[in-house]
Length: 407
Image (cartoon, rainbow, N blue to C red; front, side, top):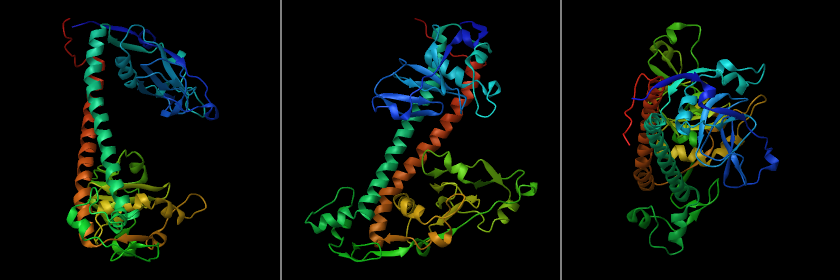
């Protein structure tokens, strides 16, 4: 096994401040523009050849981004100018594992000074082969997480595309009316049973035999609440998920599997809506309006939601995608002087198309397996991220070593 050395962060890498590039001067191209929190667009030229490592310098400090192509790091970042012979991806994981918040020198806006972090005492393997082996373990986990996320996005887009085609643009009905004998994504018996005419409704023409109803008529809408934070009986040792819009803001995909805080039985009893069942569609009703997810676990909610319990004819995947495609209308019915908020009173009358039961059943057969696969991808991503974070600290401290293949 190779030796580990006691050194400084400046012995591992040399940081350099990023470059100004106002939004008005950016020209769309193939090179990512990197801010302190991540990519914020593209430009037609670059400042740094990849692969590179970027951390936040101003606004959001520390963290770490690995950029595998040529890029433009903004002035709010620090980028690695010199890896000093060390493996770039190892350096990325090593830097990502450091807590740089204690080096904040900003009085108002968090700010990081490269001259203050270069002297940080660190310990790392001097052998680049061991560095690469460590990065390989962690990178394999990150690569699998990224693959799962791409799969989840594809599944989400597919389910939404089917919904829009069937229930917003009415493409199968229009195709049949025009003489088509089949429609992609729709089972043949369902297509054969489709009407060929439209009737007038409150939202315009809809297929004959379909209805337009108020969303509050076909789902049960509920709001939530916050048990007194001064009463430990509601919080200490809590076992029940309790969601806030903040939990929703962290989601990459519209499925909620856990919450930052949990409440006790007494806390649940202090909320009129109690525990909502898995399958409830959650929508943040303020700050901001429009975060959406299906609850993958039973959960209580705070007052920043309108929850839609799907106890009527419409399944959760239908209601979720209805909300996505209707978000402009939903937001248009929000009001408020400080920040927009939509009340249950204003939300419940909003129109939703209710197809015939056979069409709904066919949509469930198409969409539900996609959402189940999406949920499985999200769960696996969470598990892989936990494993990566555990190994990150172990591998980068030397508590766990990896074998280096002999040349």
